[in-house]
Image (cartoon, rainbow over all chains, first blue to last red; front, top):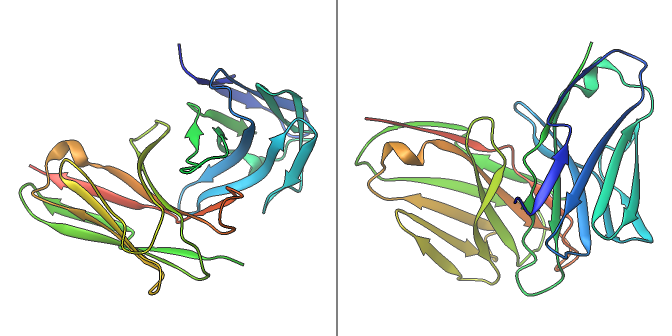
Length: 113
Length: 112
């Protein structure tokens, strides 16, 4: 089984709808992140969480919210989806230590019509 | 604000050739990562470079870090088609807080 899972993997929705993307991990990592990827823009950080009670905005948090329900679960919500939120969304995890590298989930492709 | 620049952004090369991808960043950091992404797939960690002068090698790929020049390189030796992918560098701007900033990626196409 994958260490970092994301659901759904693909979603098509309409403008104005509320959408939740979910991320779960079995790696036992305390830190979790949400990124979006757009062609030509690389990955941009939306929100990050260093533990259940520590949630921080990234560089593009407007229009998004998050919930850290447990150490292993981190959800991203679009309260009222708009077409320019169409993108590939990745969840990632890491643990404090020497290397601190991030491990990514498989991604969720979201299309807002 | 930390900026991470990669060049080239697109690279088409023939099998068997050597080439280097460059990653420049704008502020002090001693922690840099290289990732690979295949089309439609997630990101896979390739290298973690933790200090000035660090060099890591895996197969035909070798990464190095010069913190004084704020430069990392990813060198490809005798490229093969399987190396075709997009390569990202990422820089940890705060020395351990793991809030990394990614470059926009270098798309590598290796032609048989």
